[in-house]
Length: 273
Image (cartoon, rainbow, N blue to C red; front, side):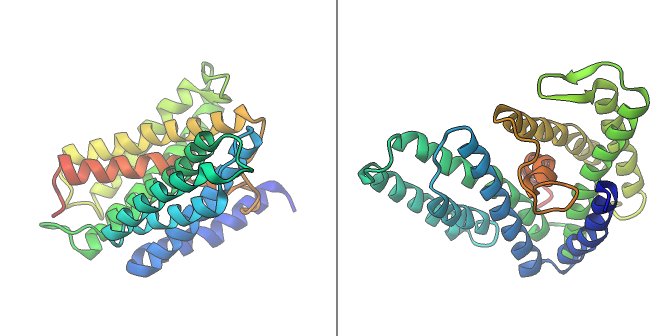
């Protein structure tokens, strides 16, 4: 089966699952994001190990589950901090661990990127405020994902058509400035369409900022993960998604953009209680 067909089949199956879970909200979406976060975290640890680091997988995944659970229960965040401190206290006693501080840093970084950052997408789905109920929260969550997908699609086809100037040749040789600009403009165009349909409650200035965050920060997230892979000479973070590589490869843009969107809407636009 060709790689293009595998990518198409994965998308045909995966996209409806994500949309349905987001629509159902609550434990359905939170559970899906928790599972995705832990798989992506495991892939991040594999990249670290390829680079010579020694994260503690079991401790890190336990802390990552708690940080991801913070979206549902603030107490989980406190437990994650307590677990991290306990791990730091006992790790030097492990005689097999030659570099305990480096191992601690690698372990905790995986619990933050991607686990904690993905929790912000769940926070967005659970957000409530004046004029923002369950349906509006669903639309905001869906819009964030759609805008990131739109950015990637427009960037790819614009770059393929008119791309001439490399964006970051040492990190991702195929990406161009033309493609990057096309991706950002594509996100803005899709945001306007969403404003005229399901995001009528979101004021225009905030819509433009959300489009900017999804259209620009998402591309930075993609480049950040590409740099991690290039540093250890790895093409994909994993093989869990046929035709797409690893889950971290598919979520890299969302991992950085989702927290930015939530933080902006919560603390600048003040849409949430």
